[in-house]
Amino acid sequence: MAAYFNQKFEEIRRGEEVEVLNLSYSNIGADGVQLLSAALMNENNTLSTLNLSNTNIGVEGVKSLSTALMNENNKVSTLDLSLNNIGDNGISALSTALINKNNRLITLNVAFTRFGEEGVRYLSNALLNENNKVTSLDLSSNWIGYNAAKYLFTALTSEHNKMTTLNLQNNIFGVDGVKSLSTALINENNKVTTLNLRNNMLGVEEVKSLSTALMNENNKMISLDLSENKIEDDAAKYLFTALMSEHNKLTELNLSHNAIGVEGVKSLSTALMNENNNVTKLNFYDNRIGNDGARHLSLALMNANNKVTELNLSDTDIGDDGVSALSTALMNENNKVTTLNLHANKIGTPGLATLLKSLRFSLVKCAIAAQYGVHLKVHTEVQTMLEGFSTAFSRYVPCLVCFASVRTISRIGVQNPHFRMLSSDLLIRVAQTLGWFIDYKGTLRMLDEHANCVFENEEESDSEEEDDIELDSF
Image 1 (cartoon, rainbow, N blue to C red):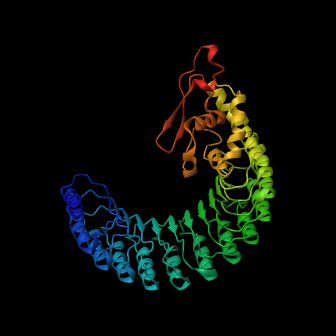
Image 2: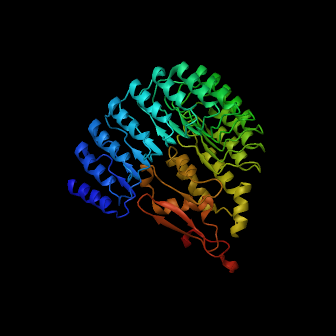
Image 3: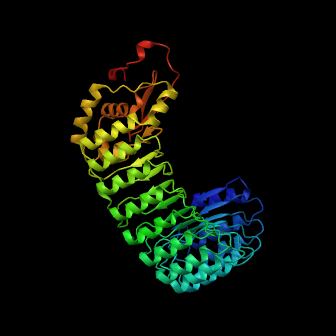
């Protein structure tokens, strides 16, 4: 391993156009970083992306690296130092580099590096400096509390602030911390467009503060991750109200692993039908919406103002009745969903049959079929086979079906190890039922051991005899 490091460092020193170097989990230590830093200061150096995650570099390693980052020959713009025990002293050395005129860092990851309030203060002061260039910062899993966070949030209001992407998952800001963050988000100097607050113990008051910020004209948020918090219906209502604001800009919303139920989904559905709603990607994984929630959501998906194209409803207690409602929505002319995940629900044979029908006969699918000159005839043998398939593998069929794209239906990825027991023939037959067997000269080919089925479009045949292709031809 040492020989490999030395070779790479020599390549960098000689300027052999090594632009990306991933040394994560390599345990190069402080001595290895010292050699690397010497290479980064060479005039021939071209390295721009450096991953040192979990490399045991320690404080001394960060000090060596920081010296290199201040050198005029340094070109590193993306740096990952996560999972290293560098503490406050390491962050201090790094912050010194950030305010140097030769600093080029744009993306910085210091997740799980065990620094505290003092380290946050060092870093925040660096972000206030005119030489700071960081636009993406990952501070996750450092368990930062309010007293430390207030320094960071103040930096977001600086005229020199350039932060657009901020990852704060696995911290403990509390109500006061989130209020401070929300105040920063409505400042005219705020530039944050992507925010991750996963697993921050957020409840009603915290969500209320964030929702108020989303309705402000200075808000710039387009992607928000609130997964793994304590968000229930009461808190969710504030957030969904914000989606209807004229100043709302959110296009991606992750609410997975919360406790939102039917009442919360009612509020969400109302928001999705509002003309100011901009959400295209919605993750509701592991909430308790059930069949009633699915019905409310289905009404929203059929509304002309709905913009959702990617929807994750896995593990949400949806059964056959809920799938029936969703299937109706998928066939509606206003439906825009292109990717749907219903993994780990309570879908049986009736629900599967309904879902397959909606996938095959939705207006969107018909439009694509017309584009490629294909027919939508369902083979009786395939229908019979599916009944046995869904009975034998009822736990896994929803996963199989919903890895597919509803609109393009271009491929299916079998990533669950339980699917490896399935024969290639059976997978091909399922793929055919999903609509991939209907091109005149289409072929299916199996890719690698995971059995990915890919629809390969070929030129349309002029032969009328090929209109009714039998399964055995594959």
